Amino acid sequence: MNVVLAKTDTARANSEILAVARDRLPGTGKIADLRRQALEAHERLGLPHRRVEDWKYTDLRVLMREVLPLAAAPDAAALQRAAAALKLHAIAGVRRVVLVDGVFAPDLSETSDLGKDVGIRTLREALETGDAALQAQLFAPDNADSMVALNSALMTDGLVIEIADNAVVPLPLHIVHIASGAPAAMFTRSLIRVGKHASVTLVESYIGAEGAKTYQVHDSLVVAIGDGARLDHVRLIEDSREAFNISSAVVTLGANAHFNTFGMNTGSLVSRYQAVIAVAGEGSRVETNGVNLLNGRQHADTTLFLDHAVPNCSSREIFRAVIDDRGHSVFQGRIIVRPGAQKTDAKMMTRALLLSDEAEADNKPELEIFADDVTCGHGATTGALDDSLLFYLRARGLSEKEAQALLIQAFVGEAIEQIAHDGLRDLAIAAAQRWLAARG
Image (cartoon, rainbow, N blue to C red; front, side):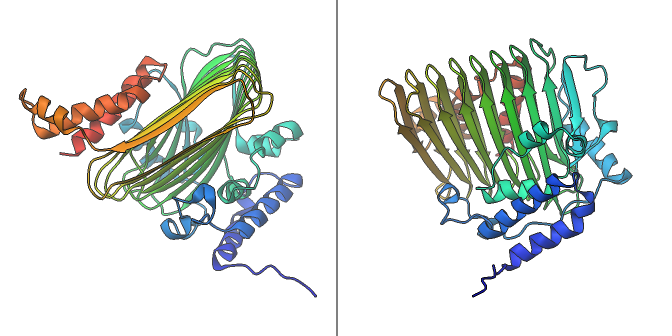
């Protein structure tokens, strides 16, 4: 009996997207085979839905329904709109690297005079060279997750950033993802390798140009942090309020390494950030912090998997969500302590603040411990603003909105304060204040 895999309408549509875009996708030979295998994995799995445990609260079959066609390479008009958007989201004191509609834009980037300690090239260049080890690292995320597999199949461009051993990069590197306006999908993947005893700050921003509304961002980041190195990572999601942003990260730490990451989401209609962080070297430390500021019908999902595989490491997770109107915030955090990972110190805390009766927060912290000499803990709370504190502030002359804003700032402040870079911390505070001001 011959068995034939029946393709759904979505699977057929994705195959057609790959067929149309094939000439634009970098890499041949083995790379093309890896793309084909990834697309087959995505077709078997389909779009994630509520029966997939890790996607229980973010059913893309309902929320997104389909994958849009691959965005065209940006023309002069698209680049002009992107340049205008950059002016509105400029960050002082950084070195900017820009991707427009998923394609590297050299004229909008600042990659000259980076010095010998920082190397930047495009994903396209990396996939078209014969560096098998680098290409294997770029395809490090496996195809067990449907959306990661789709990103592997269709990734068009991105960046490969390499920091030399012992380098201390003085200015943050800022990767800006810009959608120029067309209702299309962008597939990007970037790799950052931080050499031994090096230090660097990486900022990622997701924005839409004026007129950009219904578009999809499918992004992936692969990070390798060497022994004794430090990476500070800040993600700012300010996409169009009708956009979709599906992003993933795979992070591996060497011995005595330090990874500090912070994410703030104020944009997108639907967003999902999933990260797998492997603590593979002794004496390492991980700090993951995040804030969701949601209103309208926004849906934001943060899913973190922290894998303690070796002894004498520590991790801290602090997540805050403020939800107004009919917004929906999801936090799923899982910490696993492997056998032999003794002296692990891991703690996770997530809190959600509901500002309306229709707001929703789903928090699911998890611990899986297979070692007996550890200090681990987790917690989750959901509630409303404290009426007694509101009364106290209003009794001292503040309006209701001013009193609420002050309490909300204090609520999210613990996560924001974990940003090591002073300028980026101020940037996150300013973004939170803009969100609060927009509440009226």
